[in-house]
Length: 249
Length: 338
Image (cartoon, rainbow over all chains, first blue to last red; front, side, top):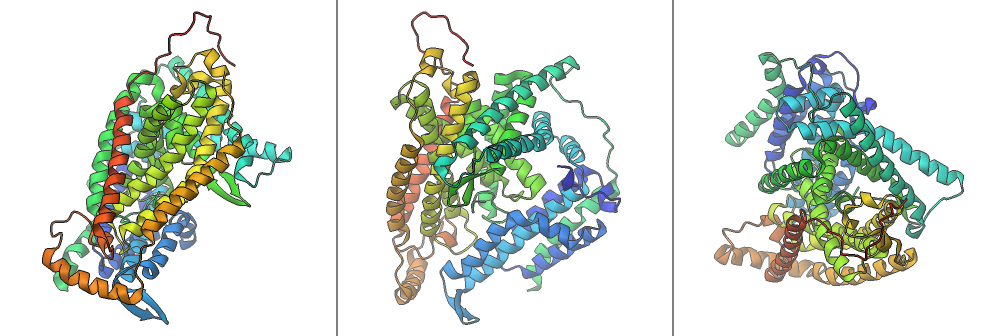
């Protein structure tokens, strides 16, 4: 989990997390609302994102590495012009669907912009700060607390599962086929039991420390108006482009 | 990662995003209330640990064939282990964490991602589990088999839900038939892996702490000890046969494409006739119904599929609070297992 945050002291890092969360949500929403052929809107959005990433001193390599989950959808987008219907045009000797090309570009642009914006958030905001931001934004406290525990124990459980796999491999179990998956499943089942029991122990530990049912949120600093303005700027830029571009056309 | 599952931003049109978002909010709100009723203040660490477990399990590859690997989705498994309210909550947290922290899934896509990966698999999975339990013997083997079958089918239902969402909010000119055929076809195969793995994990948990399996609370210790286990190979072969059958049926439907010239003519003809007696107030995305030759058949299939998914999720929601009560057994001292 610690590897998600890129330590730094840029203006973006220093912004209040609740402002960044709202800024992210609005930016992503405006980008997602862009109609099919709004190339100019995507350009404005990309420039705004690049500015923010630049201010945060996040290099392209950092971004690209974290964009891996988007790759399958980019592959799907590449397929669309071949599979889609409608009138066709000729590109580099291949007959491709016109609407399909536009759709592929749109899907790709929205996927990349949305994911990149989320990456900028996690790179500039430590997870405890993100959770505090969610709490300030009135996300149900129970949900935020559960999320906190999930994140806290994810590394530990993933490690445990990894060690179980290592132990199996050390005992010459190297499965290639689905029906050989029983030992893996048994390990997973054992891990579930251990995780649940750990949860019960954690609960007792919390009770012993005076847990009353809600996790107290400490150290809330109210964000200044300028912080909100800065955080909302990218979304405003994209909204402006959304409104202005059809008029200009 | 499976296409259409952790969908990115803008993959479906805003109308669908908003509608599924509202649905997800409503169901999750309900889950939060019911979970706190079931678990009390234990819910925070327990649900957190369970979510961490599901998240970690999803990261792990299990072998499928000759070096290729797959991932567990875990919605139905979570519902059977933890009960549907807590199970849905747990998978919801996983999906939200993935979108917010790992850029795996768009934030504006959370509505349909949550419906497809949390709500449908958990509630429809729970409904299917209850239905399968009725026809299977009331012992450990029955629980494991019902769990496996429910989990495998829940994956197919998840793909079906996505296809129906595509019908209303397609973002690319790919007809519903193609998406439905491809998604359901692929996920029938994925469902075999999911079903088998879920069954095996269930079996492992039942062996050590059967009290942790919410779906087995109606069984006594004696009943749990009984039951022959279905051999793994039988399960896989049976699953493959079912998959081949379903894929054959579905592909007939999806591959009904006229060839090039005919298609152009049909498109032109369709275009002009569409202007005359179009479904002008159609809620369906233009893209998704483009190029469907027999629109009525496609919509009929979509209707049946949609109704099935909705009924199962509804049954799951309705039965979610019903306590599985132990059947009246002969008086014997209940010995804790394990």
